[in-house]
Image 1 (cartoon, helix red, strand yellow):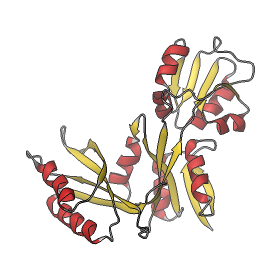
Image 2 (image 1 turned 180 degrees about the vertical axis):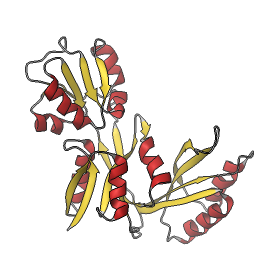
Image 3 (image 1 turned 90 degrees about the horizontal axis):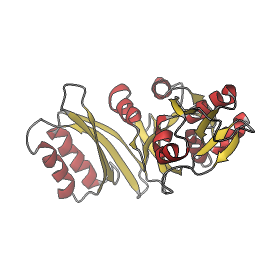
Image 4 (image 1 turned 180 degrees about the horizontal axis):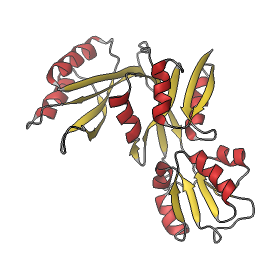
Length: 274
């Protein structure tokens, strides 16, 4: 049986995404405390795969995940999972809104609930944690003045009460998770391809790359920029395209892109989420 890691501790949305994935791919699940150690475990062969968050519909890209895939590891995206996200305000039993002074949660979660925090809990100091479940654990230890923004399952895990449910600012709140492994995924006929590249710092350089996708009639579904780490004002670009690298047009287009970029890294072709 395969071993798949996820960003822990238990009770996170990433664990739920991993559970959804392993419903059709039976595996042993193991929690890791940080994205970097999680992906390094896949690269070293300690894990067969890892589930990581890469994008949220309200807060955008999970930048650390993108940076690690671009710079720190040589791994491939083999699948994606899209999960609806519902945040709860978790407290110790008997606590009230008026009693709260400290709130523990992950930065992505606080960003997705910004309006709720401003309107309903102006007196609360937000302390960011490595995961929403870690915030729930600290709330359990902190007493009646502490709260967490975390999934329902984190509240059940740590014996916390749901004071408010569905507190995210928008109902249309989804997070995209990626399954990261060493082996490429086969074509299914409904696939997505991801890559990252940089171009010369000259007028029209990015346009000439994007025009390649148009010439080969490839649909680009996402473009995201991140600092290139070389000097201020230079960037790398993450691109998602519809199709598989084994498709003739995709293969030809990526060959041309690779020739015209200063940095190029293929991040995988994989089945699109339902």
